[in-house]
Image (cartoon, rainbow, N blue to C red; front, side, top):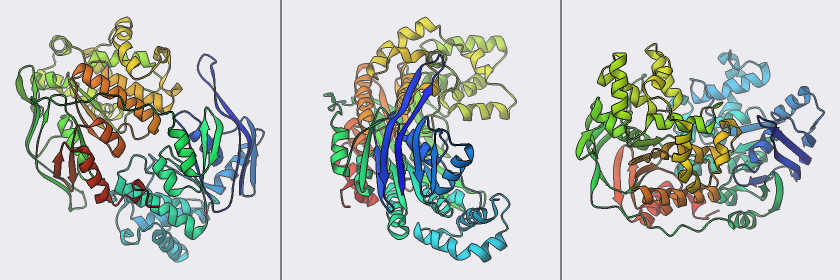
Length: 568
């Protein structure tokens, strides 16, 4: 059904350096088979999937899906035909219309016949494709959500709706790129079960790229292991997963134990969210907890529990309707909700790594580190205050600008544009660090994160996925923050690379006495790194414990996450 013969693909970086993504890759997939592909970050998994999809032209070999074959000499016409034979589901893609669930599926069915998804005649679509839309929603277990708007679905429901839309194209093969890697165990279980049901009932061929052994063992009939763009081995999921994990570093022998000193105090926090169409979505209330110096605290819970909202309130990026978020800094308690120099002093000691982080595409790593050190250094508050006075900027406005340095770049630019300002204002107030001083400041962080200093001169697009995550972490850690807030930034990492990052974080937090509050859905990561966890559901704290194994196991049971229990 699918035949890949001697496929190779190279990329050329700036300066002429060539990187081999795929080298002489060959395999076949039977109709109705689920083939797993796994390997470390940068092993060529995504490049292979893009080639199968027809969006990546190959340099050598051939790819056949159904009746369509492409080679290095094929024109775009044949690659377009390959796209018609396949459908792809991307982990971070939520390309949905602001319509109901059923209308989203009808749009895709209409486009299959009339080639225009944006101008769908819903009356015609209903008469011709209504029954098929209902069948697809039943297949992905969304019949009960048919009349709900896509915007109010949970993460797992959105993922399943995307699958229904892809299946509306009647593809020969479904290509899955890290399905639900970033999702909570409950959401992930729903998505994995939907894939099983699709495969069983439609006999559709599935190629599953995932670096998670639990996912491969739950779904795959057979697994291929990629290393440096070549097939290193293939076999059943248990054998290949064991081989893949064989080179994993042992857990570093460091026990991170918190002191008795309170550094963060969350008191009686309440927050409500509403939809524009009416109706309360999430009500957070009675949020009370303290974080001690050198705590590594995990916030766990299903999607939609309020975890990210809580973390953004801890970072002063969103504000509670009631209650206080206090930090102990420079010998006194400070409220991160009150604008001014006091809040700037908290923020200068704070690092925030977002789930949807993004490096500056065309800037070198060294340039981005220099910019980051301009935002966060020991004298930044005092120096920025002097520059603000020269520019006629008051303390509260200066603090508002400083808040932008902890937001994702796109969100920060959007906020500046809304008030008619350019991002250059941040460079005027917080100028870049000298490059020589930057290289000295980052050397030990790079060593701890197993990053070669040569990476300093690469552009972001020249880095592998794993390198991007570790470089972003280096950007946050280079200023030696006192507080580190992590919003599920490591979900894209394979377990071998994640173990490296986990060990590095343990060493760095211990060495520099960093207090960490993090959100993660990776239960192994939580157990290895945390010394305490808060369990949230529906906007409330339902458990708070330093017995990590017990609270995480309770969370797995709560999510009915059979894939984590080996109940296949």
